[in-house]
Image (cartoon, rainbow, N blue to C red; front, side, top):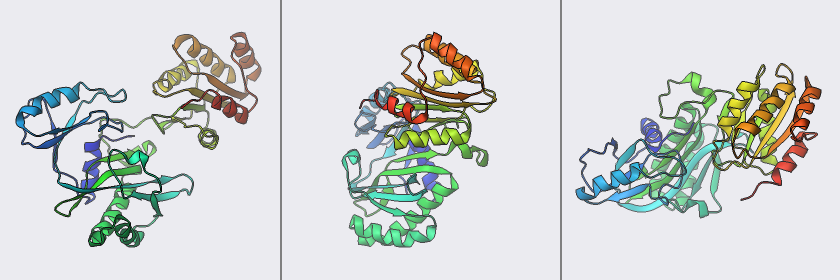
Amino acid sequence: MKLLEYEAKRLLESAGIPVPTSLLTEPSDILPTPLLLKSQVPAGGRGKAGGIIVVNTPEELKPAIDKLLNLAIKGFTPKTLLAEEKLNIKKEFYLSILIDRQSAGIKIFAHKNGGVEVEENTNFKSWSINDKKRAEQIGQELADYYEVPDQTFVLQDLIENLYDCFIKNDATLIEINPLILTEENNLIAGDCKMTLDDAAAFRHDWNFEEKPAEANFVTIDPDGNTATIANGAGLAMATVDAAYEAGLKPANFLDIGGGANEATLLKAFKRIVEYKNLQAIIINIFAGITRADEVAKAIVSAKKQIKDLPPLFIRLAGTNYEAAEKILTENNVALLPDLEATLLAAKEVIHD
């Protein structure tokens, strides 16, 4: 679940991490200027897309509000705008904490250069952290790396608080970009992206604009190029991992579970095709309680009902396989022998 900036910053602030003074604004509000007006959408690149406006005078406020409320960014139009104090910026850094798949642990990433051009950065500095006791050492090294030795104690506290915020909220990513050093020599989280683990919703009383997805349907990357459908959590996770290993970018995790039928599967297809960059759908089913022929019927229905359905790459086995094979063959839908063949075939249709 992706939080909006103002939601993420509330969690940072509650963890003791400094954020700019801000408030949510309405079209009729009268606010002191200068200020930053920020579109609240769950998408990156807002600055480049015109989603952040510097308002220098009261006369500029109303036109800026009207513009942002009608500006779609990567398919999202804001319901909310954030009015934020304009900081006196001396330097901008990058700082994040995330679940690292390769090491199966938590890592801190940093770069000396933050802000709108962060995607062009290379050679990020990183540290493993699985206990907040590491914050002292990481803060020291981070101060040296950022070349701000007078901020050592501040950065040590920041790393400890960031780790606490990450663990307490069952986050999978917290990205502070930029981490601003002001002319007044204060470190402040200028912007924040935060993603929470939908599967941990039962531990929290979350009330964010985006609601947790069902436990069996999780968005991994809304800009991913490949969707996955499997049955059983283990097979679904293995399918996602295999897609990563093959060089694909999975958009989702979907476990259809046991007892899924044509209707529920068709509903899943309709949800999957909402991903904007989707170029392939991988289906990896070992049928048991969920029968292979029900999966086949859903596939045929999806091809008939969903306009511009991306190519399907299908591996089926198990209960009622012969019936499923007949249904798909009669409808000119190809089956592949195993997951490896499915992934290789999917890679052939992916383009940048």
